[in-house]
Length: 89
Image (tube, rainbow, N blue to C red; front, top):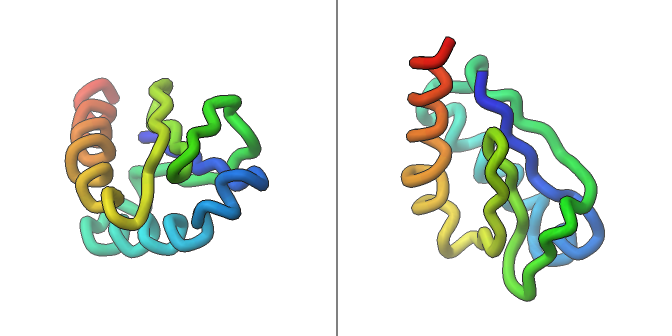
């Protein structure tokens, strides 16, 4: 199981976390991995950035995620982490 958190604290909320939640859920459906990813909201991780939203994938924190770079983030970060978590299970 891969654990993914999205910050829904006030700063990230203003920067579009709700939209990114919807995009993440759409991608999980697209790839059929809803049961393999535990996707939850979290409050501030203390890594606020001037641009974008903060995600935690496994134990790694990623800042600056926006609607513009979300697809790249999902493809280059989330999917490889999911593959790794399956291999470790």
